[in-house]
Image (cartoon, rainbow, N blue to C red; front, side, top):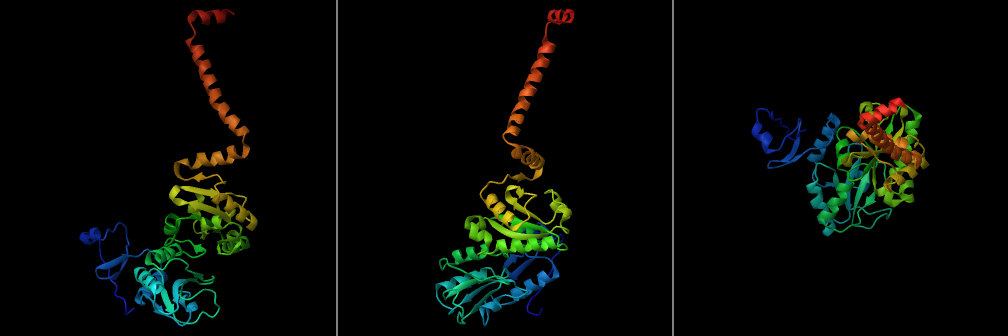
Amino acid sequence: MESVNFGAVDATSSAGLKTRFGVQSYPTIFWGQAGSLKRYSGGRTASDLIAFAKLVARPPIASIDAISHAVNAEFPIAFAFQGAPSGSLYDAFSHVAQEKQGVFPFAATAAENADKSFILPAVVRMELGEEPQAYTGEASPEALGAWVHQRRFRTLTELGPGVFHDIANKGGKLLAIGVLDAQFPASAQALGVLRALSRVGGALHAASPNAFQAFRFASLNGTQWADYIAKYNISPVDMPKLLVLDAPAGVYYLDPTVDEQEEMLSWLQEVAQGKVPKNREGLLHFPTVLYNTYVLPHLPWSAVALAACPLAIVLGVWAAVVRFTASPAESSDKKRR
């Protein structure tokens, strides 16, 4: 690419640069102008890097003929301004576009809004295959930037190494994951259901807007990630499965019986409302699984049994103490009897 310069640094021999830029893992990729470098956090495949290089080679705001031209196979998400390039909203858009260049394509068009779906001027989030979403907040760089940041993920994200950590730990919401095996029709059907639930105006949004706002949605190739899903008690023969992660809290939700659209819909609402038992990751994983599997479904009798266990232990200890602390005379008397 003639419009982009590339360079490499051996951080072992250039320890000063490593410290200066806070490099903690390899490879770390930076981009930008001299004196204003930004850390790249996107995908690491050749196609990811090519798309990224093309993105930073563009002007911060590209000129397009129609708002639909903002997205394509290379850039499936974009933010576009439609209307006369002036005023406070355009100024805010221009500021955000320069701040987030290299993260998303930003484009502008002065073309008429033929379908009258939003009032001009407008900032619109475009996603390939999805309906446009118009910004309705105040015309400030801070508010618009926050709106763009919240909508940086696809409606249904395909999880991979380049995006998993960001969406799971920094997405700000619960992550509903369809664990799928594309070779089987049941997984294809579950993917369609999950896509419908993830959309604004879809079944979950219509049934409970608050529950809808609690989630981000994603799909995961369970065959490729078999070792990862095993820690959630999911094996390849169990797919498709719906898994909900609260990664920052080390919590996940999984119900082995949920596999139909109505079940997914009602279960996600219950998760959002706090009605579904939590499973813990790490050291608390197995005690939590045992509690959720054997105690909760059998209340109140399971609670009685749990309460009886300490009592039985106390009585057993008391009997042992009484026996071994009895006086020799009492012991001899008992033996004679």
